[in-house]
Length: 451
Image (cartoon, rainbow, N blue to C red):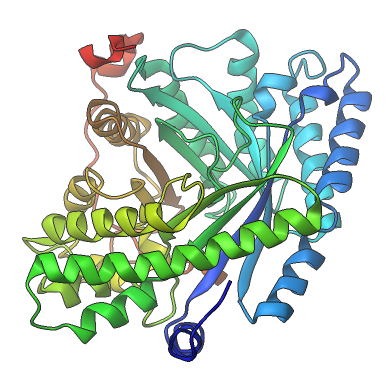
């Protein structure tokens, strides 16, 4: 791949001045050949396969960093949803906790940052094993450090599993009793993608092959610099400039994906171009929206500005990669974005406005701190509303909500590292209603019958 001197200098500025990085190189691993009716055999097979397929991922990332000068922030592994392959071996909550602990140990031995796949697909109904699996999640999160969990709760082809939504609210509250880091490693989805490299929702989906390398590229700082370079451009011209920047960022991700796949001897998967912010000043999606012209993130016009940004990012990424996938677009994680956290603290960015923004962003209600005394019914309602936005609009939506024990509105929750910090957002508790006690499923929109 040939670069001109101008492109080399431009890329240098992106790395050194605009916080551009490869956020993650994630190795997806199929576990179907690990299935056994023996708990010890199954756990040992999972541990051995993680070591065999992904044992060199950290060294590989360091070699690519050294060769190209590209910062790679995280290395991760995603696994076949463990609820699909553990039924024969795990017949109790304790069995599932032992499985989770062993997967966590394997991840630490490899030296990766996170492992995803303590997951179940519940968007239509739940098996008896699924019920047991959900029950185990709070304990698994408490007894692990880098293991991440996710549940598929809704899909445009099947509707919303109301019982699973309520169970999810309950497990989030139980996990929060041990502190905020448990809920921060859990996410519930509508229309979950099979090839997402980002945590906490990454797993190696049922349509994936034996293994794959997925790369997540992030560049809010580079996009912010582009927007600031054109302070008076009409919006359609600005969108084109953002699209061109997204193309350059995604091309970088494709280079890393191809090189990592070659070095690891496994297939290149997808490149996910998601503007995943960090707590670092200048690496904020909120600041991009404000530079586009919104007075403060959350003010009127924010949803329109975000729709422009998200569409431009997707268009640029599609041109630059062999296979764009995952989530690709703009993330809105409150605790991980200093601009968004500030807007919440000011009272401008409310829970209701965040929900509205999820109709056009890449994910959903992400890394939001709520009072620890939030009721299970209120939390289930928030989750259900977010699932409905995804199902009706045929897009991925998700929730990663952190109930903050002993915290009230306005208090700050400190999570550390890339997880950042966030003020507790205002949530009104409402009395329990019949909505969730009815149970069952919200049917899908009629377009689900297209084939």
